[in-house]
Image: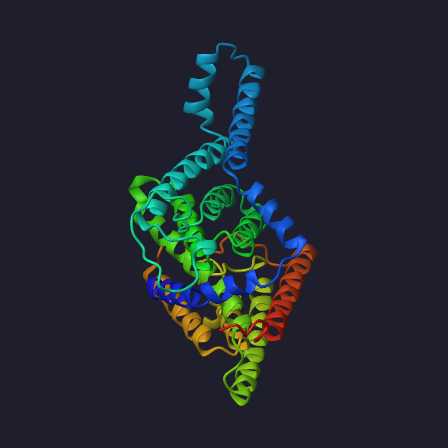
Length: 380
């Protein structure tokens, strides 16, 4: 099901490839060029490599300093003790895996670029271009190297430092977006790079014994993120087909959002910890929750509500398909989907309430943005 969602997303994004390139060619603004240059620098190989290398060196230095303070002066003894007893620190693992992910991403991109041989936007003026192996300059558009490398490193950092996930993924998304409005890549080039980068970054730290679980986690992450991006783009590029249908979907979406947020608050009060954005189940030691609040604290209804607000039957259908796939994962007990809530505090703290109110405001703002962006750029 998730593969079907991804395939449909790529089909939809491909429809916007050339129209979006033509639209970008129609205007030239200094701030567009400036942000494009910033994105190119942030996603460049030297900067990403330096970031991962500094993380690795910082972790090694910290570990050596602590071992020396403990009385271990011989560097070999320090390394052996660090590896056998302390084990590689999170910072070291993040830096090392970041370097490895970047290397694998760069190699994969280099091979795919020249095997596929897709022309860059500046060399494309229609759908009649041919694909095929090529080493000519300009025939190396798919996938985007900047998007692939930045997403690979971001996925590694986000896995080791979940609290930084929003920030590192935000930077990676900015880098990917600048490749499009800088007219360096098609929309599907960037989407392909994002998928490849997230897959590499997710699988790099997965043990061989659990590679199947790693593949499933990568696919789940990819399908969710790509559908979210597709929903925003598809909504902005299409006017509602029917005003009456749009009103009905808007009303249903508002109801689903309201109920979903209510269930999320209820789950927070009941367990002190908001349930996973995927399906979750309470532990046997905790008080059983009703069925719907188990669905990620109302996340299923929230996602469905946002999809309905877009006014697009395609986006809503893909969202429903993704939720069905998540339900099947939950029923099968797939790793990473079911999460126990054991040990949760009985009462929500002030910080929990502040966080939940912030989440609710963000969801409402997302709904307003989706509704207001309908047909904002009707180039299809």
